[in-house]
Image (spheres, helix red, strand yellow):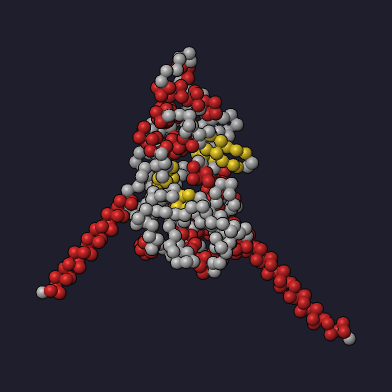
Length: 458
């Protein structure tokens, strides 16, 4: 009798346990999906100090207005976002507004993250609340931009002008693969944030989308479908290889901010998503720089002038060393005498290389100054930094030798350029423009007030 009476109770208990297990599995799957999305968004690269705790903030992000300090986005309730509701998290990620109502600067690419679907936003929230270890400490410094940009409320006006709050809408005329690539490239991967030039108010110029832009010292190149200036001559496999490894044979290799994006984000995406991004990029309308008279990956050829310097003594003033002398001393051991790269292919040739094939030479100079260090497949891909080894004059001589011998001879390296890049890039005139605009606006208001008062006295 007792067994019969307990059967319904046992069934209910079993159903409850099964439902709880399914919920736990579902929650774990949501957190894992959020982790993948956070990786696609490269959150860790900006919100973590090298060697520090993940997502704890403190990294100084260089901008034309000064450094912006990344905040703690761990689920700490005292110093992070642990008290954020889903709605508050959405406002911060997609609209650039913190839980306390203060506005974020678009160095946090919320203008791209605005494309996120509600489902993906919820998965991200689940990951940050349950998949990230809380860090109960604030970054040592905070963002302190000069006036008027220290007034965060000014970003409300900027958002009215430039923030498109509409989530991504699939194009029914395009394939599912293209739409997935567009969703990732426009949103989480935020390709346009770096590769699209900006106007005087630091908003993306969508008429030149992905046409290339300066990022302080580095240059994010044209990645439209143009054959000469962009990636129009790259195969789908070339693009996927580059996104996964940071290198495509006879095409180019990643350095600077792009290397960070690959190391922290893109190399961890699955093949389906990498192919989707590649498909989307290959469809982008072509934009061409008139200086690119042939594909940037087809300049130069193997060659050397080292025999001419054998037995020739170095000048007493080392700043007067010739290009072949500098190349022999600092480059030939890795890139070989004829610029053909290492025998095993791990170090690239200097010809047929987008780094030397462009007329814009900032990336070549930055690679010489700061080197290239990356982690892929358990190996350390390294080009040493010569910032402390070579003078500005030597960088100019060596850079022009490499460009003339192996790359686009229209690309020139100048002393002013090297000096500026070594110092961190050219100062921005945006602060002066903004202050001038405020003065003009105040004068206009004063004149309007005087006119209004005169009318009242008539």
